[in-house]
Every structure is written in structure tokens, then in C-alpha cells.
Image (tube, rainbow, N blue to C red; front, side, top):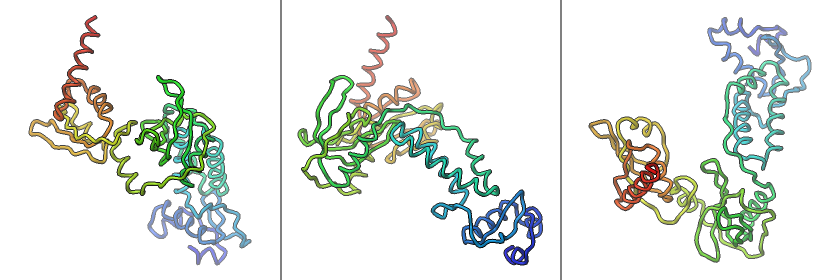
Length: 311
């Protein structure tokens, strides 16, 4: 292709594809590679020719391909949904620049169009203050303890002095994983309930190793962190076994199949009350087998539910 273009010829991508016995998409990929290598290929309406100027006016930001930019557009769309108002202006700017980069060359405009065929339903959106986020980022980077005011849903305003470890996204909410210095315990704080401003103190702390933090967070089932870990086994009937097997809900999960099509699902996680709610959502098609005290707690909850509905 480069040899023919260098002779001053104008090529049609469909004819080139037919000549070499490859798909048009393969030719498009070759053209993209030439452009990324610095060759001034001009494209228009399915034709190719070398530009008369060696100056390239295509914006290949970070040397990304058009396909990679398409993925970035989808990621940007996800970020708009899940970061809420915290980075809305920045994600909008990123999206705009990627689109402009693609539209500079009509050969690749369709990559932006392809993103229109993805729909990301709007999840629950929280009002996360950008000042809170950036103060926590700075405190984690400089290993500074922070003092923050927290709006608890039932206990009102509370003051915490914590070591901030990580910002964690789980179950459509942002949390601060931290250690409360006064209570000497680690837990989650909902970021949207942290009031601005957050105060960075002069007191320093030693950040746990990355592996230790990842190991601690790997125990989390949903939105509750605790140092105590539980090994829980649940029986699921054959009616819902396929639904359970199709999804990885936790890195520790193990599934054992029974001859009748039912399964045993075992998981090691903290936040057992969230698992109770999950099991209850399957009604009579699920039952906690172990530990027995969790099974008893579920049985008592079912009794209370039964009594409630009878009245």
C-alpha cells in the first residue's frame, strides 16, 4: 500500500482489500498503523492518498488507535455515571476531546458512532464533593491523618479522626476505607456523607502495604467491612443454579454441583448480613447450610416476615 501511495496513486480501500484478499477492516487497520507511524495518509470517502505536506494534522493523543479511543469514550461514559458530580466537568472535557480527535479524520468517525449503540442505565448517583475527594487523595499521598465531620443517617453528625487508606467503589456507592484512630478499627465511611471541608492534620501514619489492603478489601461482599471473616455455605435449587453459576460474585466463591442439579455455594467474606439479604431474595430456592447460627437468624427473620404479612 505504501509503495503504491508513494507513486502518487489514489487507492480505494475496497479495491485494495479485494486485491490482497483481506477484509476492508484489515485495510483500515493498516491505514491506521501508517498514520500512527507518522505517514501523512489522507483519507476521504473510502479513498487513500499521500498528503502533499509532510505535516500531519491528525491528533493521535497518547498514540492511541481509533478502537482504543472508542473504548475510552465508553469508559468516560461510565465515569460520568459512577463519579456523579465529582468529576462531571472533567469527564465531559475528556469525552469532547476524544470525539474531536476521531472526527479530525473522516476515516474513523464511525468509531464515535459505534459508542451510541451502548446504553448505560443511570445508577444511583451521589453528591460527592470534589473538595472532599481531593483532600483525601492528598492525605493518602502524604500519609496524613484527617479529621472529618460525618453525617450518619441515624446517629446524626459525628466527628472522626482517621487514617485514610483507599477510595472504594462498591454497590453503586463510593466509600473511604480507613482506620479510626480513637476506636482502633477499620471500616467504610460513605464519601457522600463526609462534609466539606476535611481537615488534614500534621500527624503522620504508616500506610499498610498494597497487598495487605487488597487482601483486607477482598473479604468485602458489598458495602460493609469488618475484620471478622465468615465461611458461609448456601444451597441453591436447580431452578436458580444456572443464574448463580453464571456470575462471579466474590473472589473466594466455590461452587459444588449436586446430581439433582442443585448446587452448594461457599464464600469467605465479611458483612454476613448482606449475604443474608441476598439469600432471602431467592426465597424458597435458597437455604444457608452453614454456619448454623446464620441459618437460625434467617429462620427468625422469616418468622417475623410471616407474622408481618399475616397481619
